[in-house]
Image (cartoon, rainbow, N blue to C red; front, side, top):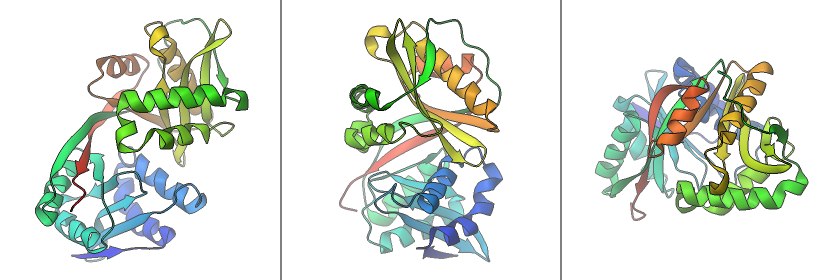
Length: 283
């Protein structure tokens, strides 16, 4: 096996695509990140790409767009070489994000290779759907977010980052920036409006051709329990499917039983669990 850093994103995508499309649903996020790097180079300040080749076939790969964690994919047989290749680059790696059990295996290999301590920061679950079950009626309607909503989106984005722990791992400013960047985009950020006031937000973005990711989804605490998030997520998902996406997906925090139940009621089904690991900085 041979580990390599790849600088050209198109070259990297062409090499790793056969591995990733073996399970397109699970690999929707890395496929989407690669498409963004390739077609919107200003979206990320920097990116790093690594792969492990075994006899002409890619068996493992990883990508990182700081300040976000490393994304790791592939077979555990290539993880020792992958970890060694990444470490040789001397790029700071704050942690790793990926599907169970692969990500847990990589975190263990990283600790063995570097001597770093590791800790699970969050456990999540991926859900996907290609057909929406209509949500229970909730008063209101969906509308696109507009420029005048920017202060509200910033406040809600900050609250979402703090509540989910993303403020610690990625920074609240990065979360807010990501939300604000979707104003006016397609699919973009949408709001649920009841009695003339926004009561929930949801985002949607093209992850890879024919696939859309839904998120973030946020409802302020004072108006929770009224079905707004369910109604908004169902309406946005239906719109995305009606526009031709083959399926939509989203992630939930496994520590939040409410979100894990409401999305299943509108047609989302579990795909796989995801762990987010934090590495000590000295590695």
